[in-house]
Length: 309
Image (cartoon, rainbow, N blue to C red; front, side, top):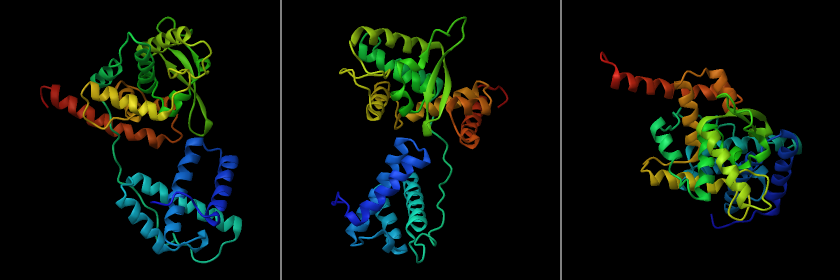
């Protein structure tokens, strides 16, 4: 869409809604940003269509918005979130500002996605990716720590880049026991995540390099060459770069390492409730998605190796 600014009649009430979400709903900043992007998309579309007031939005305009979003390549999951965001926003307007009239989303109904199994790496592919960065350079040491946190700790990318040095206690890693990380997840919910084995070794190695390289760094564990905290876009580029380097053909992104961590935990005998706590899932049904992947993996192993398969 060529227009990049909203008329005041659309932007003012949107700003009130987002401020209310930030103050009262306890949502993470990434969630607030996602709501803002969705409402900006809706508002810009309305402005292009000559609609300068949210209360004048119609069902036909919403259908046009969905069609336009699909033609511009918006992913199905993002389209569902777009409608969900708009539904909540219009409901808030009715409650707070007394807008009357027919609900334009009443005939749209709820949109559901086909259930898709998460993409996962095999254990060999995961280990190949983790060993791709050059161990002899400071960049390689940092990127090895990043990949180890994503796979070994099962962290979301935002959790990994926001992790502080003070959140990690590797002194507990004695007698084969893992260390502990304090991780701030979605909705600012904290959880304790064990960190042991290769992942703990790589984080420890990076901390040693970090202490020598920077004089007055930020408190974040993972830093750029300018001693600033990394952003999520860097993490995406890094994962993709190393995936290409080792010849992984699928479209790699950091969350695939988290998916792989969950699946491999279940394949190794972990129970759903423990994996749920490890990953910081609020709902056990989210964790259950990985059981389908695990079953498919077991079926493949059975077919390949069982003499009576």
